[in-house]
Image (cartoon, rainbow over all chains, first blue to last red; front, side, top):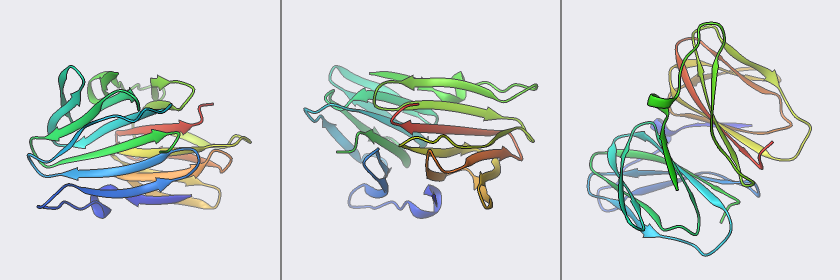
Length: 104
Length: 104
């Protein structure tokens, strides 16, 4: 059992978004991404089995998808196959929790 | 790909905590629990393989563990084996996201 506070552990970076590996096990990988306005996780996909969950903790932006964008705000949970193109662009400081199962 | 906003979809209940099944697939199960002050997910465990992640979105309380409690507040992520006793007790309105992999 382990505990981490994302508001305390997760940092922001001016040059690029920051990434905190929260957990990695055979069951799932959990990563916290923090974005300054304008920073983004580019649209991408992996041609493998599995799904991911993107949860916005704080801030506003948009999820990137194959066919456009979806508004992203605190409390939003987006679930996609890892093989579906996905990404996120921040419009404010934005904290994101990404869970990937099985881990990649 | 699907999106849900937990602040809009997740409800509270006076008689007992409320549970919203966000997602269930062969990869993971994602559940949102909302608690009023004093409500709790009792200490429990399952004797199976896998891990869970409990993420506090909002509110204050305490995580329940075999050997005591740990403070729980917004931004806290607790990771445990499903076979380790775990639970949560709320001290304020509290929103929790639980991810279980593999799903049970």
